[in-house]
Every structure is written in C-alpha cells, then in structure tokens.
Length: 218
Image (cartoon, rainbow, N blue to C red; front, side, top):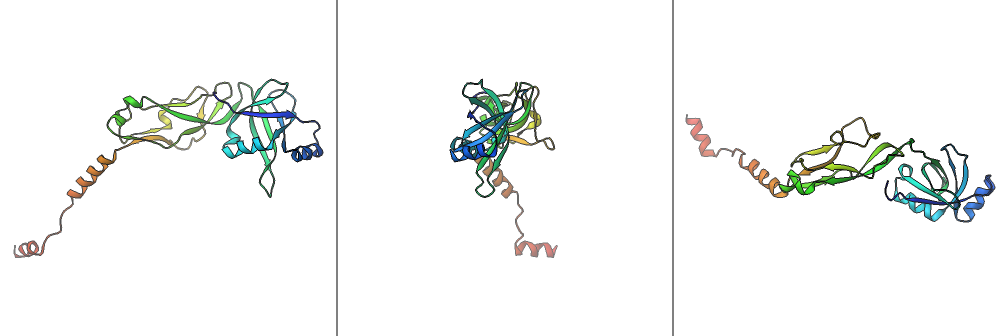
C-alpha cells in the first residue's frame, strides 16, 4: 500500500508503572508491540507525534510502518489506545504486528476512471461522491492502493453501489447488511429547471366563474 504512514518509536527500558510514568514525564507515550510470532516489545512514542496522528482520524483502522532504531521495520495496526479519563489524552497504546496473511479492517480510498468517456458526464451530468473511501476487511499482504470505480457506462441518474464494484481478491466490505451507494451522476441544473417547467405547464387551471356558470346551464 503506497504512502504507508510511519510510527517512530524507541525501545523502553523497564516495563512497570514506574517506567511508564517516567516516559510520560519525558513527553512520551508508552506502548507495547505484540503478535506476529515474536516476543512483546515495550516502546515509547513521542506524545506530539502520536497526538497529531490521532487527530487525523481513523487511527485504529490505519496500517502503519513501525520504525524502531536498530530493528527491521514492521507493519502494525493499533488495537487499543488508553486515554486519561479527565483530559482524554493518550496514555498508552497497543500495537499488533501483522504478517502477510493477517486480516485487518482498513479504509481504502476510491478513485474514478474513464470520466472523460462517461455517458452521464459527457451529457452534462455532475459526479456526486457519496463515499470517498470504503472500509474493507483485507489481508495485510494484499492491500489495494485504491478501489477503482469505472464511470464509462454510468448515465445521468445512475448510481454506483458496492455490488457494482469488483473488489480485490481476499477483500470484502465491512458493511454487509445493505447495498450502499458510492457515487452517482446527477442531472445538470439546466435540465432540472426544464423538468420543473414541464411539470408546472401540465397543471390544470382552476375554472373561472363564467365557465362554472356555462357548466351549470348544461
């Protein structure tokens, strides 16, 4: 997966509450890395860097490249972030190592192709993106960079649902109880105005008093 964000960490000496408190006093957030067939490793992450990544959102469903000095980089996903009950600031994090067959939930961005040949867009329609990314369950060794949506045959008024998309092998959407919409092509405003005008023209006018009188004489 392109542009995988990094988590930069250092090894933490000691594992008790005392070592964790010292780390926090030093502007660090203590954590542990586990799984992947290796022993757990105690780490520290700079508070400011972690806080910025948390603010960016979707931290628990983002795949990270963990960098520790003197060790080989490894793919990880965060399984838990403990927070201060009063300040709501991170106080500890748990990272899980992933191997190529591990299955994880990630948000994958959506990209659109064949916009220049799209039936609906060439007719003046407007592309409306309902979901710019889709949450999928994927294998760590086969994470797509994006989900391609082909707009070539999409006409004005048509929508693209998740059932219309061919997902990468081994991937499936996290939402399975409905066929949700990803995008659609809306009619241009000029066409909408013409339709409104036609509807108004078809309305039946109320009869005048003279007409009502003629009808009564008959």
